[in-house]
Length: 145
Image (cartoon, rainbow, N blue to C red; front, side, top):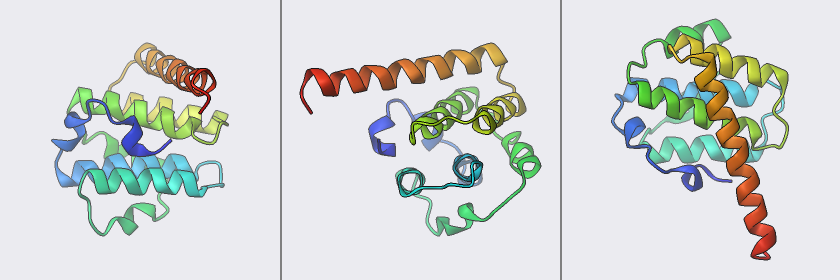
């Protein structure tokens, strides 16, 4: 799945400041690195997102940072809908390699809490993402893709 395939109503993210978009992307990078196995599909997803949001020179977002630093930066996101979109994107990215690890799940929870998102809402989004992935996979079988 590519980033552009997941776009639905990401105008909320597109309207963030450049600095906030970079924080959004850095969170995706942190999640991709958390299991120590950042694959090409995850990199492509993040690069597609950077291009979608017109972030140039995005190589810096791939620099290693601490979880504390990322969580602190996430607190600068003040648009609730954009924060909800980030939780969705983190869940999608976490599932992109078909192996959402405990560390990835914990980070998504901590990221959501840092942005003021309730655990119940994070769980709702996670369940919705899983349902969406299952639905898309069923479509491939039904339509013989």
